[in-house]
Length: 338
Ligand code: AQP
Image (cartoon, rainbow, N blue to C red; front, side, top):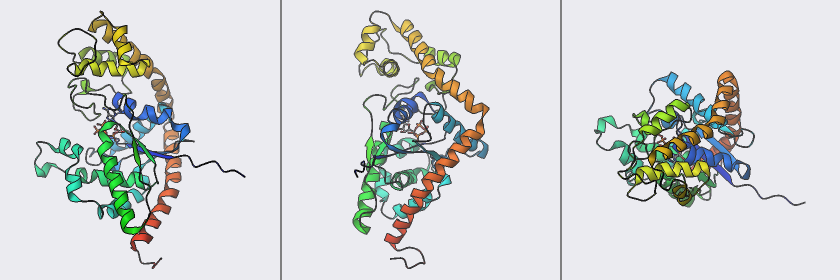
């Protein structure tokens, strides 16, 4: 009897810190959906990672459900890609503490995201959870023996740190964790702000014109694309000295399945007006099926809850087994298990 080889395990997460943007979609969700049949998947709404951003419990609950509905609406199939809320599996927090014992202060201090998000802030305004974020992320990934972590480019350094943490734990206590690899696509991995094209598009950007949310209706998309900054000349051409137009061309190219040079040829001699009009139409058309599904989930919110509960039940089985292996290896606990 031949047994088929185990499919690689994929794990990835998203903070329910706001409404998912076209950046989150093109850099992450779209890839998760496109390759879900190839892998043994687990996806997570990482609510504990959002505690330092959201202080209103109702907003937290609404965002968790809204983001889950968005991921299902975008095509995540709960039968092959279970989705769950991080805090429904307590081992994420438990493993974080254990991994903090093999994570160096200096490593966390060097994380670019920490430096970016805390720049210009006083110590009193920086929560330690922001500093500790990569340890919780390492625990999210390592808890499930994940082989691949499909993320946008901004998370590359955190996955590298996760690898270092896994290797250090394995060296100290024996083979315990799979050492994961980041899966970062060449296109879409870094969609930039529509207002400041040298800055990554973020769902928590206070300027709502800087991003297109997946839930934005056509009139909002039209307005935001109209206001999107462009570069000084009127040519639709991609180059490092034209970051604004290059970013818009990248969005167009991914959605139209065209390379940047094909996009450039398509708009040769046309200028920004026709380009922005076509980009708006393409975005509206691409998001229409997601909107239709979102309306379906809005009419049946219990279905989202049910799917999240199912996902958590599947994740807990794996997390409990891994955490008891970890505790046995480190020797903590009163059971004298050897
Ligand atoms: N601009 C982006 N381009 C491509 N990919 C992106 N991702 C985020 N922004 C872009 C990818 O989306 C996934 C989920 O990210 P997250 O929500 O957990 O946190 P983040 O990376 O910090 O994303 P945001 O939108 O900027 O959130 P906030 O504002 O809460 O910090 C990840 O795979 C990420 O790479």
